[in-house]
Length: 415
Image 1 (cartoon, rainbow, N blue to C red):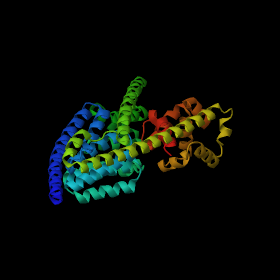
Image 2: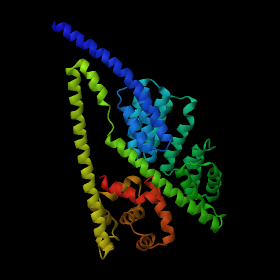
Image 3: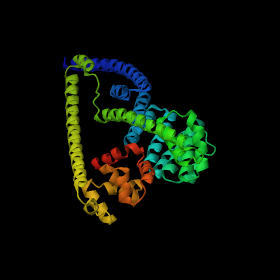
């Protein structure tokens, strides 16, 4: 009798498992389509929540899961959370590999390479590009591979190599990289030439920001009124980028928190067929979720404590009657030591972004919230040059000038 009961339980469990798998596949597909629609409707937070539902649906469709995680990684990229984007693209690559979709797997490797390029890890980026080409050497990947190689060289400040990879430019992104390379090489006429080609056909906000920068700084033929108009338009683009970035940052926070979980109501109903097995699985899942929430809560508290400490130290420095003496302004090694102590190793971690002494001092003053005139007085240069210096420093951190202080706060807080 006991043997028959065990066999009956196993058969019921198998039947329920098959039914659950079919429902999970259908639910995951529906959530994936809904997430794509929300992304196109410019609702990144809701899209991220729906994609998480698809990711945690329990589906066995590896290729579909790869697409789900790839969409979430792309939103992380747009939010300039490149480390998170790299990690999520790696998850999507694993799913594509398990599902046997070789082209999608190669694209995922190339996306990982692009993220490494942005983080100035050129060798790692090129190695991933080579892996993508070896895994899928045929033509659909060609332009993406060239884009990643050129981007890796651009962020490594190897501008001649960028020109080599982008000649001739096969698409607008390569054209943008070529224009930026010419701008950094101070070949103003060439930079302006390509920027003017791109301007009427570009809608991406980040690209428009780069184009306006090139034109306002390099176009010697533009009159003052034109430059004022472009500067105003660039300011509007900055505001739009910042508003978009807030939404995307919230979407990334949803991803990191992992608040969306599977719908347990259906699982509880199905667990009635397998009784004890379903009950134990439910309790085990709840236990793991509780542990995860506790861990995440502790992480948030720790980050909040760091933020309070950093903002407190900023206020102390602002209230100091002699700021240069307080931070040993004229003794750079001692200056770095004090800033590291006050802001959780900020100067040391900025070295990973190839910051020079001037960059580090600008970052410190921007973190304090100093105005252009105050920064110019401290650096003994004209206030007109501060905007360009800040832009150059911001580019090394892969952010816009308007987001530089927020990025520095993030680096100081996330020790």
